Length: 131
Image (cartoon, rainbow, N blue to C red; front, top):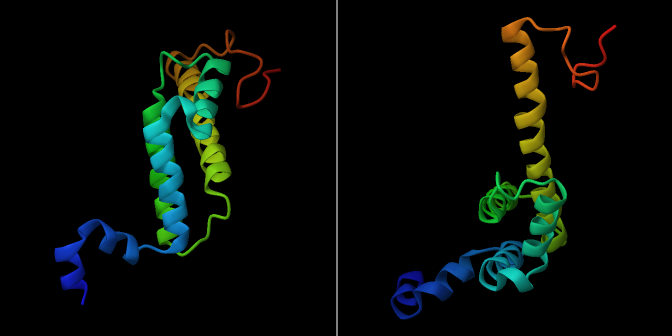
């Protein structure tokens, strides 16, 4: 029966195989990609990048793509996403924070380790204050 459906409507067959949760998530992702500036998720990511002054370092599409991958992975593992839009915004926010943590905190710590320059280390370093 599925073979017959694929011959007639290949796109509808793929949708039939997806869970309702995945279909809701895909709808939010599609609207975010297609409507961009009118999308709640897209404008949220753009606003966060401006807030953290990361527009030159990170691309909205890359963040949205990573959020989509995480969402699909979560749904395919059997977990449910109640509100895909809110979940995607929160996940993209955490992706931005991960970038900040990796880029700024760990890179400064690596610099301190490789140079042995502990006297000039920042007092707000992730490893705590230096006494």
